[in-house]
Image 1 (cartoon, one colour):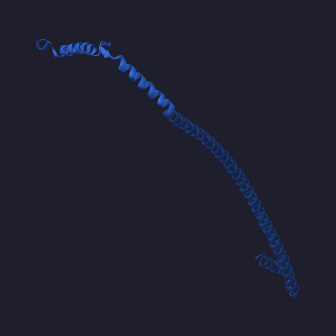
Image 2 (cartoon, rainbow, N blue to C red):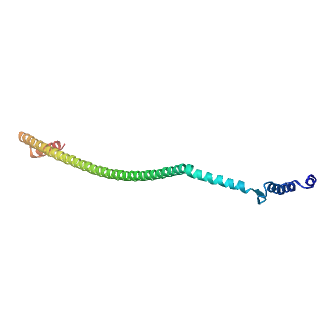
Image 3 (cartoon, one colour):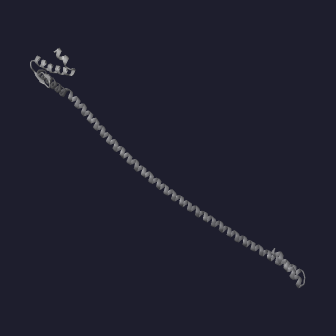
Amino acid sequence: MAAGHLSLSPPQVARERVRRVPETSAQAAGGDLTLLGLPVQIGTMLFQLVVFLLLVYLLQRYAWPYVARALEERRERIRADLEEAARQRAEAQALIEEQRRLLDEARAKAEEILRRSERIAEEERERMLEEARQAVEKIRADAQADIARAKEEAILALRREAVELSIAMAEKILAREVEAKGDRTYLEKLLEEVSR
């Protein structure tokens, strides 16, 4: 065998060993099965199967209720969290809608206040213009009345003066006995004095 190993390459040596090991193991175990080139011992396999089933039974009997309860609690916690998130989302949406409604109301009130203030400002402007017109009319009427009064007073003063001058001229004419030609010149002078 040693001589045979010298002529074989390392992969061939490994294959040769794998072939020989099952044969020797199967022969040593008393002739159990070979499956896919590996020795299979039925007694060991049955023992492992029993241990596996016992382990599954023990896990199902003692561990699975705790695992199932933990999973159920987690499922409930997740469901409660989802419901809480949905409730909070609904509340947030309601708050957003309320804020939008309040904002719309505030805009409407602001626009109403703006329209009202514009209307009041326009009315105030019209009132002030009317008061100014009335004041101008009153000033004009007062000025015209003052002018008319001043004119009347001037006319009365002029008439008084004319009467006084006429009386003075008549006195002077009567006081002097002048010829017709001389009276004429004297009257012209007096008229010039009066017109000044």
